[in-house]
Image (tube, rainbow, N blue to C red; front, side, top):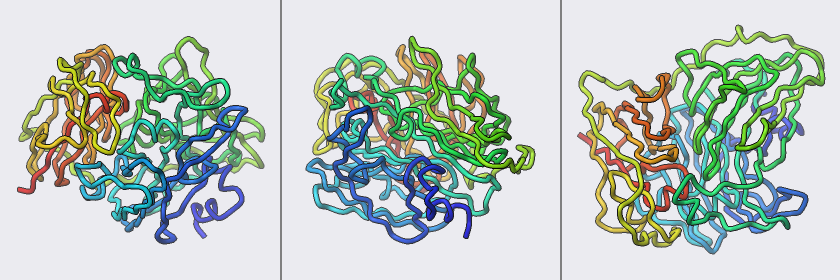
Length: 460
């Protein structure tokens, strides 16, 4: 029995993984979107949305190069559709309503089937009634294991996200118009795996793969590790091929909504010692989001034992022959309410791409922001003309940052680029996956009020 099978099949699964896990190698698993309740504070919060009636969405485990079948059943009165964030899969399986599929109605099932080409840390969330369903809990982590075990002793998934709750534990409105027109509407209850600073046990002296995922609708987390000898081994699902400096309290790592980072952590040698994933919130001291606690006798592993993670099979762009496309992200000069069909509207247009707001998920006759030819290389110039930060996510493809007017950017493969205030970033990609691919800000209020579009990749 391998390590993952042991963890998923043992009583230690919750402690080791932080969330219940579903091993999809065992066969087809129906995922049921349903009402849920959970004690996010002292009181039980009802009106949540999960794949379980009383627990967070489980970690879904697949394996690189192995087929996955994921029937999604919707039991809610609202429509939905499931997107697999970061996975380079066929366009028809991408889960974007009206662009790649029709929304899933109550008591309907949509069969998602794909074979992930890449290993790494990914996640899933609805792309219909996105704001309400995500804000009420429907964001889960997906782990695609490498074809060969990379040699760590265990792993820990940490799903970071806020909730907006009243004092009695009930939900406050998921957004405000003021928040949507600015940085977004922040939650007031910060959680890791739906818990307040959970503690997870791992063997003393062992090597732990810490998978940190920001599935929030709004918040950009500023994180660092306290008490750890560690290094960053993957970013947004893909192995790092250059050394990335470890963050510190004075220089934390920014993880925008949709982004992920994998650390290799050497656990302390003595039982009871711990490693903390720390975060900084405005006007507050650094606080622990989750703690890894050493237990048992030390196995005395060394980070130098780890070999680099095998590269994913992404084609590198040919910069000498790349065509340039420019995109401007900012406020919209136009008003009006977008037409979102069955997938919900916030009732406003505040944002735009190339000074044109997205007219709505169900709007007809909307063309692509750009048309790319399959197999060709492109440079996309992303310009943020607003004072707010925007995590820009491109579905179905991966890209590499080239340069910024504000900072040095390591060339890390990614699907989500966090644009700073007044920043211009150039990214490069190979258009190797045909289809219409959503391209939007992952601050969901920005996405749903105009900062959305799509890029078309056509077969040559």
